[in-house]
Amino acid sequence: MPRTPKPRTGDPTLDQAIIDLVGHAGVSADVDIVIEMVANAVKMGRDGHDRGDLKIVNQALRELRNSYRAFGAHRAQRKCSVFGSARTQPDEPAYAAAVEVGRELAARGWMIITGGGPGIMTAAVQGAGRDNSYAVTIRLPFEPMEGGGIVAEERMVRFRYFFTRKLTFMKESSAYICFPGGFGTMDETFELLTLIQTGKEPPAPVVLIAPPGDRYWALWRDFVHAELIDAGLVSDEDLDLVHLTDSPAAAAAYVDAFYRQFHSLRYVDGRLVLRLERPVTDDELDRLNRDFADIVVSGRIERSAALAAEVEDDDEVDRPRLLLDFDHHHFSRLHQLIRAL
Image (cartoon, rainbow, N blue to C red; front, side):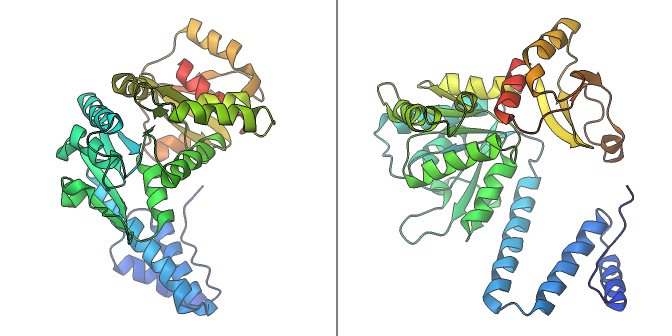
């Protein structure tokens, strides 16, 4: 569909002024979206919201803009978020494991993202190295959040609001490794699982890691089984979204293997397109259709060339593809399909 500017302020003269302003500013890409953003700012001002409401929107926009600029320099490189306690001390096994996780990921060509605080966050940065780390920090009155002092300033992204910080974590990450932690770690872990389970976040590998002998995640899994799965509050397959291990090398290998064949996905006209690293064979395609027919509404999983909308956006057009009429419900099964590739 043509992407025409639509300010829609209700005032044709004002609409044209917004279009002229954006043109005068020299915006050349995605002009329709920029025009709508400006129009929404004007409409909020005319709606009579109080200053506090406007400040939230303005601060959120500023934080996201700064985030996009910081991550833009390394947009093509996959990144893994590492979550865990800020209270973990350097002499604890979990700290040493986080250092090793960072080192293992960097050796496989990954960058890492942490919350920029002490404990597990600093440990992961130490392992990955200054040139392979981002810190997504938050202002807290009781905890230093400055990337352990070893993250480059241009990759230190500071936030006031948790919601913009969380959005950045999810938007910029292709994988997640979670160490034992407190409320914050639990919040991050459950939120990312919720987003993947509901399809609001693309499928991604999630590793729950604790040192040998530490039953933190094993007890968490027992709780999910006893209180959620057995009660019918989540499905059996939902727990398959996570992988438990006590080995940093195994954690990094699991993350890396998820993208051995799968590259990315996109929906076009309601159909799911899986972009791949290599074409699937006939036998592989038959196996996928046999094992995952339950999540295909109609037809079969098929090979496909880039669709028209992808070509228009120059969106990974040279990659082989699979096309399916996904049921938009069983995202945990979609996660399994991707791993089966």
